[in-house]
Image (cartoon, rainbow, N blue to C red; front, side, top):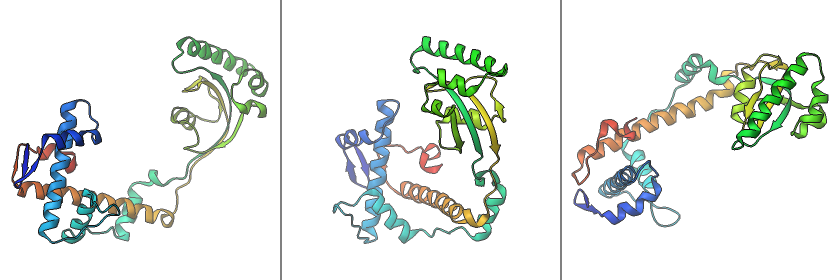
Length: 255
């Protein structure tokens, strides 16, 4: 049993809470559950001490409800200024580029991820077809014959692709490639792809006005998370807690 300023948290409550805290083992899940219940109890106690009334749609106030009310009452959280947003924009230009555009054609040699034999055969055939293409054969004709993608009906063309439109493992490779026939097959969860990049249009730096609100939201949320962590830290330090030892320096709350 854990005591939080004379309020008790039973082992049964911790066991019930564990389902919401998946972890690598039972002990880790129990520790996460206990920490969550302790913090929730501290938030309720502090809200009661301040006379805060917290409501929710289900008439059962959650820990988040109490936390929001307490932060609004007791913590002054600064908001990012335009100057801070502009500085972040200048220091992180790579975050604010539009996606490059690729004009891509491909041949998909399908093979299920768990079928090792089919994967080997697909890769071998892909290498053979790349050699044929390097010798002047038509990708459109080979796509018609070999590709398992519906794009074979349009000569293997996928049209223009921007980031986020394809699976990550395919995207990582094609967006790092130069225009032309990729010399090695591209592996994805679907099998192996023979890829030809007809055109690559680099991404452009977006104007500050287009991303200012996004930057402000990011910086404000970052500051808020830090303020919340410090506030909870203070509640824990000031509390009398028996049966649980917070290791504050290693707690994810303090990250």
